[in-house]
Image (cartoon, rainbow, N blue to C red; front, side, top):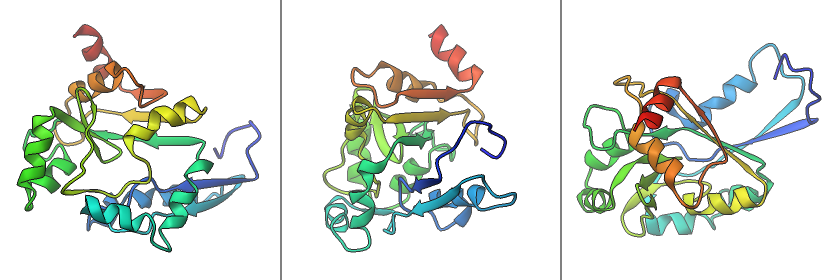
Length: 209
């Protein structure tokens, strides 16, 4: 953005897609803002719309928080989104630190929810929401991540002309490709993404299989 010769909008708005899920500030999804406030300055103004809510709450609490003052405003502005950029967590259940969401479920009193996810063939998570081979797994009971957009809403946003970009690389912990998750995303009848940025190893693995 600092080097582009393409005219940029006068102001760019960046929306947090998920609330903070970890005590480590370096893993805070909102920490991305530092890339847009460091020097040299961007050739355009930037504004930020945060999701000021707890990150891991009960499904019942999610509905209440969405209508709470100070949080409701973020959800009201979903219609302003033009581009959604997300990563994804794979290697569900490997037990080696590959999936942070799996760790959150397996490390607390969430046995029933974890069993529900595994019964629905969970392969990982997209935007901190569980994804199975057959599509998004909606948690109606139990604990879940606080997200700005549900996975089920992504096909409608794409149909409305929005861009949903998945940036998927090798696992930062074990270095292996997230093959099962990538296959699930690409084989869904209703597409959850419109664009994909993926490493060559993952791409070749999926094509071969």
